[in-house]
Image 1 (cartoon, rainbow, N blue to C red):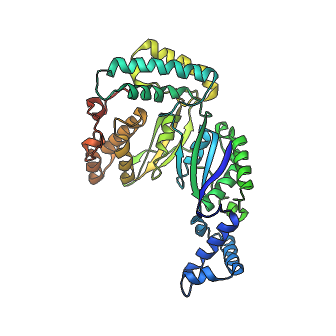
Image 2 (cartoon, rainbow, N blue to C red; image 1 turned 120 degrees about the vertical axis):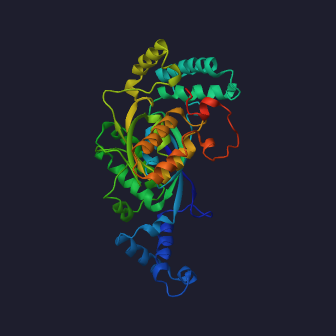
Image 3 (cartoon, helix red, strand yellow; image 1 turned 135 degrees about the vertical axis):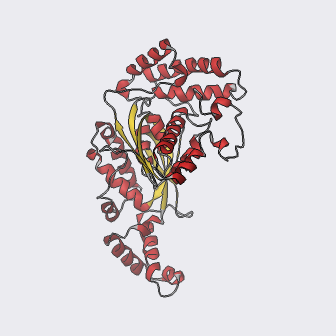
Length: 380
């Protein structure tokens, strides 16, 4: 792992905790300032720091969210990125396994390349006569599904932006990684320790802020069953792969948790599920990477939110271009809402979105003109 600062609140210099503390101290003065912000800018450094430290000790840490840091994380496990990306108070840009070939070796590389070729052939056979399915798109879809054989510990790279306050909370939680109930996330301890060491060396850790996160922890792991309901807020649960969870958690207006399933089960691409030979071969090959925790491994996904924010998700995911697994999960949740809510207004809102987003008022810049995609009945 390598962590570096590539952007921050100031464009002129690399900020550290001292500069962020000064900025927080000035901003903390706005609430009670008798004049204007110019007076705060011109006050003595001693007065600014005194106010900043009083504000920290009182637990009023929101003023330290005005300062933001963008980190670039190289060679971190995919699962580590998922851990960060579940916190919602962030912006991230991550290397995509849907659109780029990942660097792997051994049995992962062997199976990734094998199924890339198999899936290319199957997609071409079923949809090759459709104008939407260009050679490039077929290769992308084959790659997207072959990546299910990659481990959740496959290295990835990402830019990650969060506030100075949140960064210190993350640091504190990384130090407490043993609090996870499952062994899966505890395996990230070496990377968590490295991450903390980098933040210390970059002078970004403020122990007063770290303590502010002591009564919180990472949100990714579910520790109790949540009953399904659909009203002016909702809660639902379903099975999905690690890969689909990583897609879903990017909808930051919704809340996501996961729980591992024992014994392991695996996602099966729809395009091969009716072919018994290919189906059995896929599942047998999954056993070869079982110890690596492949991204195809199914988990119980718990999703909560409001109907308005769910429809924002539906607007993006009910589309031919979306990953098939998350498209079908979104379609299923929408139908549950229609079937189970007692709120007629919400029911009507959901019924307006019973097809792809282009049938619900969204103006697509590049219409797919693919009937099975628009009807949400595709197999890839």
